Length: 167
Image (cartoon, rainbow, N blue to C red):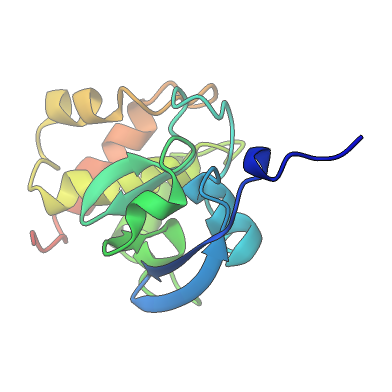
């Protein structure tokens, strides 16, 4: 059986700016950003849960706005600034104010949702909403956590807001 060349997907050359570093690569235009970040750039901090945009475990920031990397095509992000959970940590050796607050308030248990929660928490804090528990709940509504009951996560965000510099 001969393969129809029109049915084959062709790679597209893209430059992705991830965590402040530009990466030139060829990607299949059908590949989700999550797959490229994990498989091509070895940024495995984000997790793939539902792969349908429901759980929030794959959350990244694109141009400072939260985005589900499982639903975003990698080719769509050409010319944008992508930030992953790896970039949002203060240093590799010590967590920043948000990470410390998550630890202090036991805001994670199994840890599967934690990368997406941290990305969304950064966004919440950068928008200056860290003292508004209702706004925090609203923003976290797209992130599923089956372990904590959300209150420790909200407590951690409120605690971190005292040390957070709003951008």
